[in-house]
Length: 68
Image (tube, rainbow, N blue to C red; front, side, top):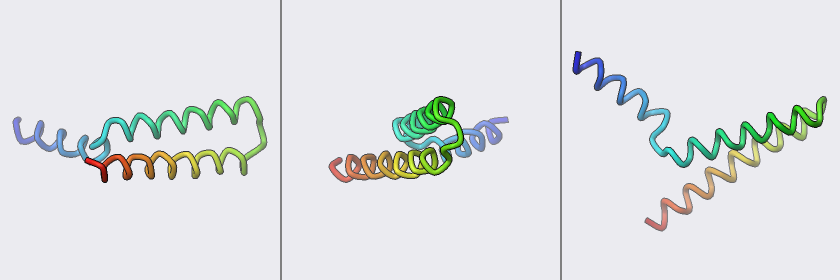
């Protein structure tokens, strides 16, 4: 049973190693979904928000990790 628990922890750690990064990406996706709800049929705008938002969050996270 402890082997299964260890496997679950490792699998969870693969997806959520940095909690702040995961929360920031969820916030970007939620913001894009909200804007898509406000302004329907603007797929290029929503795609740009998703791409630039996720890249921006990743860049900030990498810069902060480099300082540590």
